[in-house]
Image (cartoon, rainbow, N blue to C red; front, side):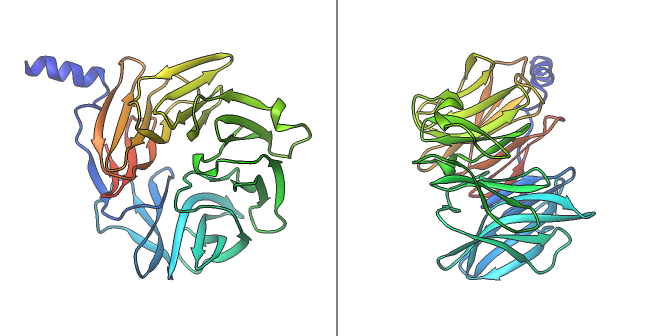
Length: 310
């Protein structure tokens, strides 16, 4: 029996046999991985913080990069600019919403832009960068600004938008959702109507997005998780009526190892699928976000209990 279980674990790349471990016991509001580190934001009654920790860390080893009283932070991304690495994140203090930058070695934050109509508490993966510009979506438009600050440019206008689904960069275009329709817009801006730039139409509201070089993944409010490559749409084995909140894959093309989180009002599940299995899922904490699977098969995500690896 032990030999059978061991063989199954090897077949499944150990994803169903490895116990999850806490990286941090702080609930993340935004989460991103670099080559060896994790960067995340969190908040409490006193204020909000940007954190750095190693992917191999345990709770208590986090480093505060920046803290602000009375604030709440959201999505975070990073880029190397002028030989230095910076984190870029949504911040809200009172009624003012901004995009800020902080050195990934720690220090004071710089405000790059004041923005409106972004729900930073419920938007995830709604801030993206290609190292030259920052991109985000509000409830009226997809926007771009230089990574060092400057004028904000409207790339596309569709109403209503669904910024809580997040956005994704694919080659020279931005992928975003407008309710149940997934659009693309060139990073340089639109010269045609969004109606002629449709990638897919979902059956219900799009709640999560992820892209690879040859395809687009999305989650739907009814629980469906799908991927489109060319004209072919494939439905993955998800949990009905649990809302997809994040999706990731560890390949440059569709069909590699895929993971996603789905949540109800009190609980969530992490789904894991490899090219050689039919998929599995495990219960995780409430408010799960930021699922990311690495080329090694290691998985990270955040939920109400903190940041986890598996």
